[in-house]
Image 1 (cartoon, rainbow, N blue to C red):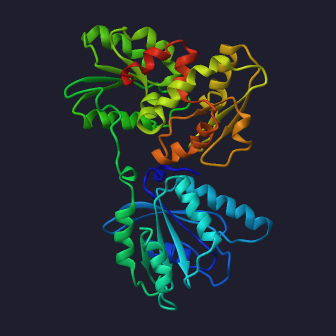
Image 2: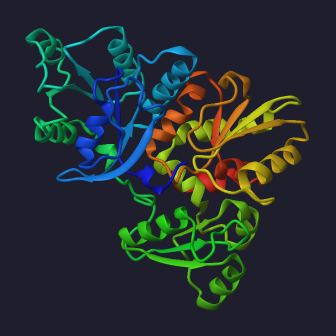
Image 3: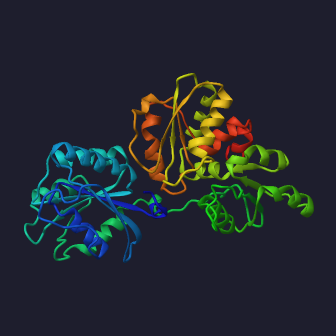
Length: 399
């Protein structure tokens, strides 16, 4: 299950069985969060643990199965290990006994394919230190190399310092949703329906993020339900610098908000913040080209209980069928699960806002589609296009 903690930097721990990956996880966590055993293959699936490391801050450790696992189940575990590379911000490649071969080479190739920085961690220094040849192989390629003993704690400080140095800034940076769009003292109107999908007693994360970002930009956030918009504008005479709506009521917001006030949605704002915005803008109009029998992939980046009003599973498919008049098939994949079909089976991919995951996770989620030439869009842009207000909805972010 994908939870809010997935917004924290992720560190994946990879390598062969019995190299001490789980012991490294426990060393970093400062507690026994992973089972350690001399029996090969103790870790079966990637295991996430949210921890806070002194001088590093809150992170998510992802302990993975051995890349050299065996048998039919072993191959399935290896596939899950490889899939996890897409979601991590930094990888630790754990070796021991100065081993280096095809397994390590393949992992390094996959780290590079997903632009994942990595550190080689030679474990079990208390048993056998790395040979000069082993250490120099990496240092000569300017690959960070650290020698540790998860058992004794030797090398822990150096490992933390190496992690701090190697972690990309984007893993920590929280770019602004509205930077460059609003300025100090601007009024931002946030239209937030309270419907059957709204969590009891709470607001959804994109709405909360929008409020905070407005405040961070020294602007004034005015939050109200859609049935109060017209009264607010008429009674106060205020002309907001920007109006942001829930995508599901785009057509109603478009009718209520005067044309001179820029209008967009929470989802589109997130697509600029986290997603491949230009690819979304380019891919969205391809909705109009869908044909009978085409298959659409809908990616939800969180898991949740669904209802008959669910946006991704019910409303968007229904609206697309009504808009195109075509018999289109839909697959929904929740969380960060593997796809049920090859990406080339799909005519278009529609990604949710991605509020629960990191920017890298979202980009890697769409990487295969973009590389295969499959058009991509997101919930907000797709809905705006179907409702006939696409150009207005993206205008605040398009130069």
